[in-house]
Each structure stands twice: as C-alpha cells, then as structure tokens.
Length: 196
Image 1 (cartoon, helix red, strand yellow):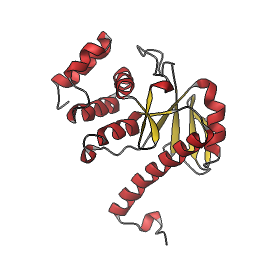
Image 2 (image 1 turned 90 degrees about the vertical axis):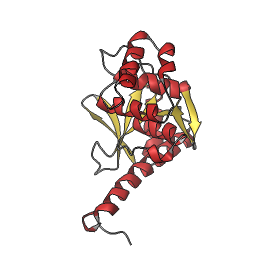
Image 3 (image 1 turned 30 degrees about the horizontal axis):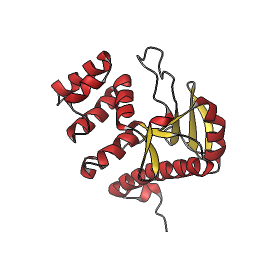
C-alpha cells in the first residue's frame, strides 16, 4: 500500500523524489530504445552516470532529465514517449514532455536539440546524438561531448557538474589542451578555484 505524499516522513519524501526521477529516466529511455529513436541523455543525469563509473558515493541527485534529439526525430520521439505516458508541451519556447496530465514542468523530460545552440550567445552548438555511449543500458553523451556542453552553458549548475567530474578525476588540467580557448579558460578557472 502506498502512503500518501503528505503522510510520508521527510526521509521517505526524499527517497520518493529521487525514485520518481529515476523512474522517469528509465521509462523515457526505454520507450525511445523500443522505438529506435536516436537520443542521448545529457545534463545532470549524464554527469551522474559518468561520476558513478568512478565513485558511486559522489553521485549527486538531480531533478532534471535532459535528452538530446535531432530535430528531425522530434515527432518520432513524441510518439515513443507518449506510449510511456509523456505529453508534449511547450514552456517559454522550449519543448518538454510532461510526465502525465497533472505533471508540472519539473516533472518532465526536457528536450535539447542536437547540433544547435541552446542560447543565441552560446559559443558552440550542442553535440550530436552520435557522440553518445551506452552506459548501464541507456545512451549517455560521451565524456568529451558532455564536458564541452557543460562548459558552453557554464551556469552555476553546469559549474557544479564540472566540479563533480573534476573531483572524481574524470577530467583534469590536461583537458584544457583538447578544448577551444574559451572553454579551456573556463575549465582552468574551475581548476584554479576548487571551492568555487
């Protein structure tokens, strides 16, 4: 028997919240896999997947589910995700897939378009879905593509993701030589200021 949300203890609410995100990620990627829609998990869940390969205790829970799609595959993604109960919606010009009729934008899969800039002022476009690797049964952006994407966005959340990857040794100072100058400078700033 499921205990109503308001009657759960604080710890049970925390666990339930994490379980809901994990369930949403599993259902969405499973539907995309069955339908053969090319995709790549990016953002916080991709960071968590990579961090878990080195130190599972360092994995940070994340609320958002960001999935990279080719623009040409959006209709196929919509059909696939609808079989898992997701409903396409647009919020502030951004496509999302709400997890059911009563879901809020926080309870959604957020669409990121491959090969396009997320914001006009971004220095680079997002990676392509071909830059994904299979990790624990789902397609996740490669470490190189994910690092570039996080450095391009470089908001507080992205900096936190990058610090997590630095802390467990997934990326380090040697990466600055592999990056365009602007991104290398951003990474060096994080390396030089480990405490933020």
